[in-house]
Image (cartoon, rainbow, N blue to C red; front, side):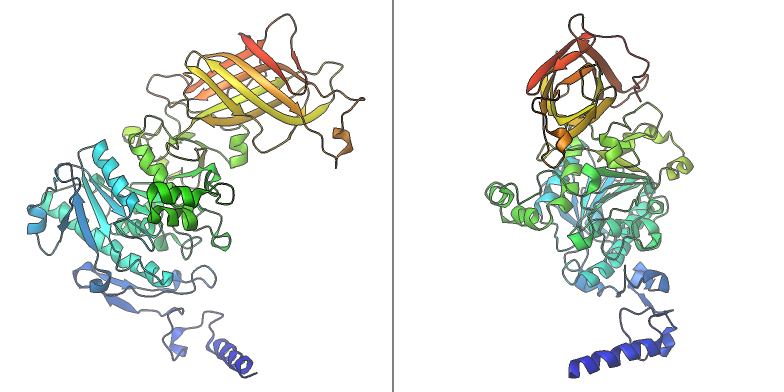
Length: 543
């Protein structure tokens, strides 16, 4: 009863103060961190000042705002690695120029920053792995940002600390630009989770910063907020983002689903990543044995969230390009509706380290205004369950015949074996389960596989299995119906990245059944073989 009275008094006081309608703060007697106070500013030595205006608040999305902890508590540090010191980092301090002058920092080389996120440190395995792959990829300066003193719980305080860490990064960049006459375009900041927004804060303070890569930017307190609160395309000349855990915090998804870059990639729809379902596979015990306690804990708590890191690391030196396709939805992409990738266009893009080489924007061929037109678009692709994650994309289109004996529709499962001079791959064309197929129409499925068939398809074998559904009488096929599948042709497109002079990035092969019949009659649990190249029909659309 006492507790209820206290709650009632608090609610009454809230209403009286006008909190619910965002009344002026001068009516409030107590300095509460979740209420907007106008004109409150705190300064941090030569870094500059911060304030918290009403635009930083939202009753649901961001009800609490704090100022960062003191600089000496967060203790942001910069650790430099180069090919001359790939394993032993050296600390750089703006206030002590000798630490930079006596280091292996080379102003003639590009500089990459790696920024960790919440409850993370520069000692994490992924930081080391990313640093190693970057140095392997090119002769560059790699600076690891250590803000472990500010990344610990509470989350609300950590989000506030990112603003100060962003100022620290910007301060170092400006110092290097002034001292060594370096152009802002030579800097690239790579940030994970809260580190992605930290990169955004830094970029907002450095005009024309070259690039920011956001690896599954944190959702809580950022999604749905104005651009100056979170990572957004204005923070750098080029902002690319990988979304892997966008289910929403209510469903334990830690990453943003909202586009926040020039190029936003959504591997596997950006929500659930293959191999991250701990209820289906013994992920944690295997990871514990193979990679240790740290990685096992990441798999247990945030497998989807850290997948963006692994995809980016894999993309640095792989020979397999991560090709994303601009599409209205992941379902449309998987149905083969978005499968063009032509030179000079922006309907496909490269995810990861080589995003700047995407068709249409490589070598700055695309203007900044046109790059801005890409904001809000989503690029979809599929990846594998484990390293190496990159997969080749294939679109399989089946033209169904409709002879007199055929049922109007059947439902079941289709698998394909695709043969080429480079080898054979086996793929599931109905991975979502039993699928309804209407004779006289076409069925399209996008599948992925590690192997590259080189675009020269020699033969396709289709395996068909009819599936009945006891809840749907029409599917019960015993003696009075035909469970065969009738197929006219099979077309296979393999997506490749276009280069200069290529007419199209899609290698298309259309095959028909061998013999005089215009279609293949495939019984349930039987196979149909397609080997003869057939003339492209008008109804076949390569787009």
